[in-house]
Image 1 (cartoon, one colour):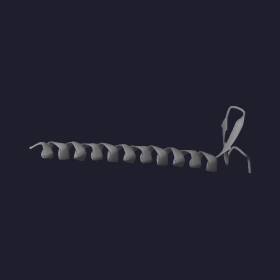
Image 2 (cartoon, one colour; image 1 turned 60 degrees about the horizontal axis):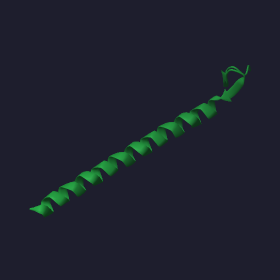
Image 3 (tube, rainbow, N blue to C red; image 1 turned 180 degrees about the horizontal axis):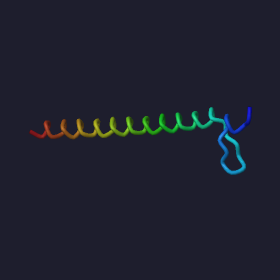
Image 4 (cartoon, rainbow, N blue to C red; image 1 turned 90 degrees about the vertical axis):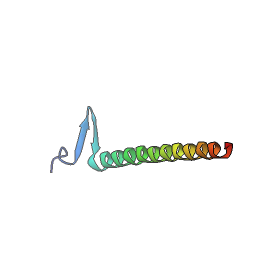
Length: 57
């Protein structure tokens, strides 16, 4: 079985498909985690500012 089937060549470096899948998974996971964290932060900020407006009245 040739190595081209189970590896991706980047110049002189051969990277296995498992490593590529791991990198893609970690990238998507981290992007999602940062996105969810940012949305929660904005949501908390919005509810906090609404509470301040209600307390002013």
